[in-house]
Image (cartoon, rainbow, N blue to C red; front, top):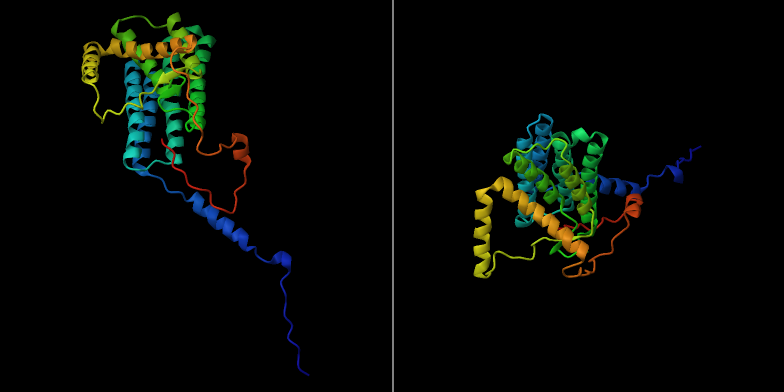
Length: 294
């Protein structure tokens, strides 16, 4: 009697799902991301000098902390230009730049303000310093979500590197005039006003629409030479005066509603709500890769 061979059939519940393997493979490919090294190294130098400024402020070396913030601002301007010149702009670089800016131009100048001048005010002093850092973070977040819908010739609110530059140049200004900054009420008011104008809707000229590679009137060169001469004569005083004048002019024009009205720009793509974006599940299709300007 011959035995009938029996075959075991696998239950449907135990069958491997090929779609699950595909999802895992695509998720693994996304997790193993590749980045552009050169512009992000320049951005890291920005954060390095911001952290160095924090260390120097804690040690009481306020002048070194101020110059470190200025160095961080230099690398902050350099990283975007390097990325555009090497065609290596990316969403990762844009987000990383904002995080480094928060350290260098939000936390570092806020701590410098408190340790240098505002600590005699007690709770009011550190709250105003925190307000400076918090408004700087809000300014960066608003810039990230509105960079595709605002005109590039103007900033909405005072840029956080400019606010940090005002704080750093103020330290140099006070030291050059040999004034006592400890417990100074004008410095407390300046910190609060800087926090306010960063999150305001005041429009500040960005000068991104000026192309210095093209031919310009001769008066532009004369004005540049005069400005350079004035700054070199007393850079400790003139840099602070120029930065503060830029911030005050934007605030005055904003309060009095002078200047051109903001021009509406149609967004290139539909923007998603942040809350919906956080809870959106990973789909089977790979999302399109975008490379926004840093």
